[in-house]
Image 1 (cartoon, protein in one colour):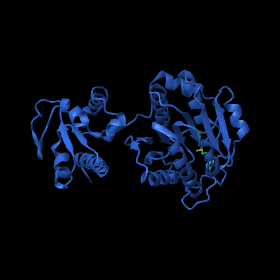
Image 2 (spheres, rainbow, N blue to C red):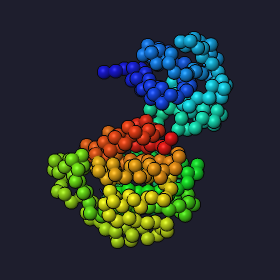
Image 3 (cartoon, rainbow, N blue to C red):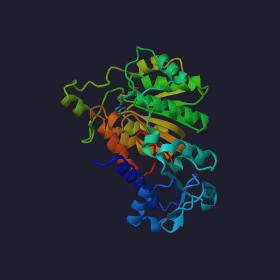
Image 4 (cartoon, helix red, strand yellow):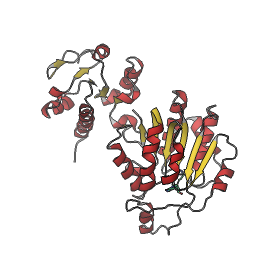
Length: 338
Ligand SMILES: C[S@@+](CC[C@H](N)C(=O)[O-])C[C@H]1O[C@@H](n2cnc3c(N)ncnc32)[C@H](O)[C@@H]1O
């Protein structure tokens, strides 16, 4: 069992190795001898362009391999591709300074995963309002409340930034997440933004050996193969009748995802639970995703795998990430296009 410090050292070293493999210039913010010694011992530090900065004057000037700890004022002249925060206690403050004061892109700042830990609830009245607006007759929803919080935060980010493009909902069922998206865009005064939903309305198709959803649920004795069949295009249209700019595309996404061609995507919520649907849609969505745009999975972290049932979705994303590096907000299901 690793100690907390060992886990932290490993996590941050993994991020540094990823940056190194992409030939990135790295600024380490925070004097943390454990991580730096680990990287020096692995032979990485001597081979990568790096600097170490710390805003605490007591740390400045301390030797680090062939360099000394500098003031963050030296960041602009170093021109880093990535900033790795090595001071977990002050991670959020450092993140904000790096972005706001030194103009580092948010997607280029790597923080310890604790910083991104999300609560299952959110007190923002807009979020609560949005949840309450969904009629109770609409069945379905997202795996755990935290994903709805992520969806809320990601939509607010896309609107405020602003990231140009449409919002996609891949996997509609009866329209719960579609309703949430449309309702929030309306409340944010952004209801002219197009929302595009995809579903077969035929339930889980599961025709690939890695399509794990139904098999798991049946093995658990939950039910037969009747998942998500109690819906239809007409029912969803009825549920979403109050919103303009909504298009629903009916059919197997492995074919219908072509509809994304010629469009620009700001955010895509993936909630089809299975491997083949997710694997087929990812490349097309990614190709049309705006820089800084968001891919949000309902099922990626272990606590959102629904007793292992949606592991196919996770497998598809992991496979996709191997040749499409995206910025992953650690511990979440949120990925940003770099
Ligand atoms: C978990 S439900 C979606 C729940 C929805 N996001 C909500 O908020 O209630 C999964 C949906 O994905 C759809 N789906 C699964 N595989 C599909 C495929 N290959 N093509 C189109 N839709 C698919 C199913 O029909 C089902 O409605």
